[in-house]
Image (tube, rainbow, N blue to C red):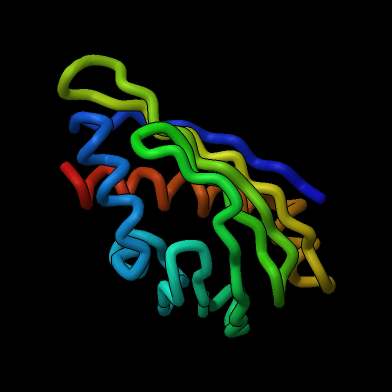
Length: 135
C-alpha cells in the first residue's frame, strides 16, 4: 500500500468545511476524474471515477465519523483504498483539512502513475479545488 498525506488551510469555519465535505455527491465539482459519488446510506458510498482513461467503480464504507473532526473510510469492493480526512479549526473562520490516503496500485499504468507522483499531485490539486469551491 502507498500512502499520501497532504493538508490545506481553508478560510471557512470548521463546521462549514466539514458539512460541505460530507455532501459526497458534490465531489465531482472539485475532484477531477470523479464522475459520481452516490451515498447509499449513512455509512456506504458508491464511487465511479476515471484514472488514466480507465473508468473504475467501487464501494466504500465509512468506518469512523466524528462531526467537525474526522471521517475514516475503506473500500469494500474494487480498487483497494482507505483513509482519513481530518478537520481542525485554526481560528473561528479558518480550518485545516488533512487527508491521509492509502491505496494499492494495480497494473502497469497505476504503478507508473504512482512512481511519477501523479496520485499525490491529484490529491493536492483536489484539495486546492475544494478550497476554491468552498471559499
